[in-house]
Every structure is written in C-alpha cells, then in structure tokens.
Image (tube, rainbow, N blue to C red):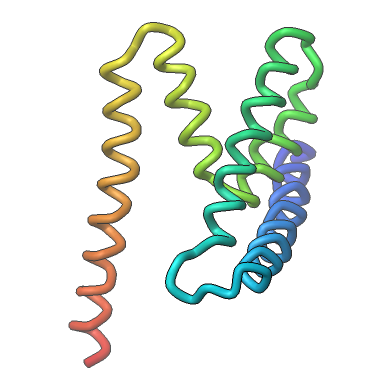
Length: 127
C-alpha cells in the first residue's frame, strides 16, 4: 500500500510540474500551431529518466520505494514518453533492436492511430 501511495504522490507532483512547465513554455514561445510546451516536457522527461536511470544502474542510488515515487510516479505523471524512450533504449542496449523498433513503432504509430480512431468514434457518438 505504501508503494501505491508513493506512486500517487509522485504522479500528483509530476502532473502539476508538467502543467506548469508546459504552460510557461507555451506562453514564452507564443505559438498556437506547434506544441512547444509538450515537446519541452517530453524531451526534458527523457533526459531526466536517462540521467536517473544511469545513476540508479551505476551507483545503486534508488531504493525500490524511491524508484516507485520518482520513476513511476513523478516521471510517469510528468510524461510517459520518457518511459517509452527509456524502455526502448534498454531494448536497444541489450541487443534487441527489433523489439526496440517494434516498441517505438507500436506506441508512436499505434498512439496516433488510436487517437484518430477515438476522434472518429467521438464524432459518431456526439453528432
């Protein structure tokens, strides 16, 4: 139960951080056409998860509970794109290039396709 609460607490903090940083970036760049805020959040999340994963791997820096709080909770609330990137990188690093490409392809292209399908479903439902 403690782990679940830590994930929730981290997710709460990460979601708020995503909201604030994305909004700030979007207002600074003043573009309605390109999602600068989302790009900054996703790319910074990828950097942070890479940095912290290396720290955890090389230095044993995180306990299981701290990983739940920071990786699953906070970074999960901040961006799940960071998790996709890190897991794909781990597949590439272990020599599973096909699985790494499959993971990226399924999630990115599948995500786009399902977002499109959801919009079509919404149009059909709420006409």
